[in-house]
Image 1 (cartoon, helix red, strand yellow):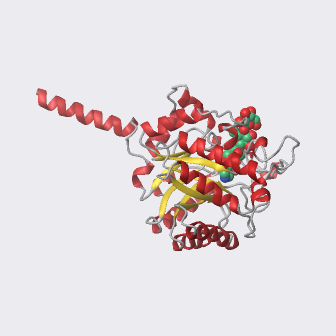
Image 2 (tube, rainbow, N blue to C red):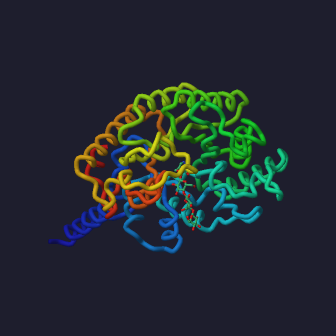
Image 3 (cartoon, protein in one colour):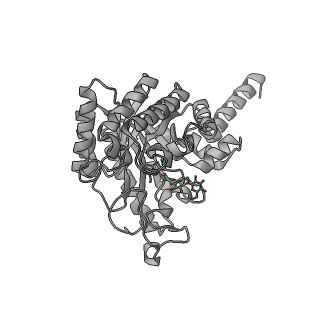
Length: 368
Ligand code: G3I
């Protein structure tokens, strides 16, 4: 082998190695007409912050080109005590994702859950005044959006403000300010960073009534000349429901309002339903063995096949709407870290994601 040949062999080897193991190597993301995203857990962010190299972080870099923190950028972790912001973990995460060229989304500016008690209450525990809440919203949203300016592409500005029957959720925000709390949140976010994408995010989009109310929020903001870029459909679904058509209708409805859509928190539970379809985090059901049929971490092959087919069907629908879909994000990397293992029944073993408990891509992911 002459010198030139050995250099080109080395170059080919280096390219092959990068493709197999490196940040830019080929993975699921490379076969998608939209960004493929994943929610990054607190444990994974802790590894990032401590400079640890793990199999999970490698899998994320290889297979996904968009990320969002599963918990680390919610109100409670970012401002646990009024006036005391804690940005270290989120900063480590955002710097890491930027360095690796992944679209980074912020989740979430206003949500009734994981909200520190002080945010909407006075010292006496009663709801605070309208002025006080507006002041706190403005301070939190502007401080956080300004802090991450230019480092996150967009924010879920408001999460889960609408119920399945189309009414507004009676959150503290709503009780104090009415539906206009949403408008204020979008206003404060836009004032802090005019270049930032602003999204409304919710679950349960099989409900046409819920979607109508979300569409009316989009119209209201737009009629006031305000910025709203899109509607996030969380897509926490089950192996047997809801219908794909119900989500396709939702996508068509929001796109007709002139905004983009994103699939923001997808997972597919295979476990028996404890009741209806919900992502309402305050719900809990008592553990019963029959609600946890595969506790040892092995899903029967026929159920795994059914799960793969269900994912493939949904991705075929997403591909049909690729021009309107900003990203498809799964809510967690592997089955072992899914929130569904503890929701709505604590202590179950679910199989809702693309990566197995032993950190292997499920074989059917190739067909997505
Ligand atoms: O951070 C505390 C920790 O200090 C404490 O020791 C530990 C003990 O339980 O709890 C930790 O907080 C937990 C947090 O996740 C971080 O791990 C909360 O108890 C737990 O309730 C929380 O669950 C998250 C849930 O949102 C509520 O915020 C889930 O991981 C997360 O997947 C889930 O995500 C939501 C989206 O944000 C919005 N859409 C629905 C989706 C699923 O509920």
